[in-house]
Length: 69
Image (cartoon, rainbow, N blue to C red; front, side):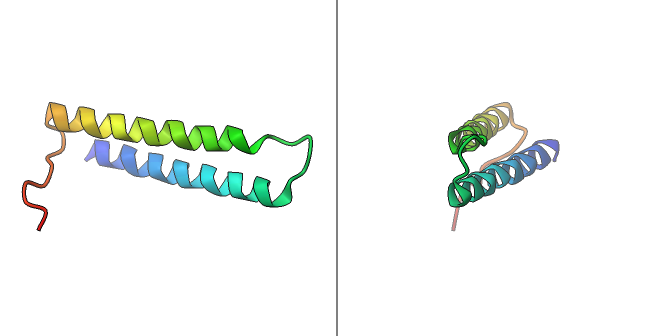
């Protein structure tokens, strides 16, 4: 259960960074934080989520669905 909560919080963090990058792109104020900073955070968060899921499946903390239909 703890792993699922962490994954959910990381997904919320990823969506927050995507929204922040969107608003920076729309405003386009020179001298502010670059949009690439937030896009990079989003990419790193998604890589962390995939790594966490793979580790959790390998250790048996979560079980994949054997029949998806």
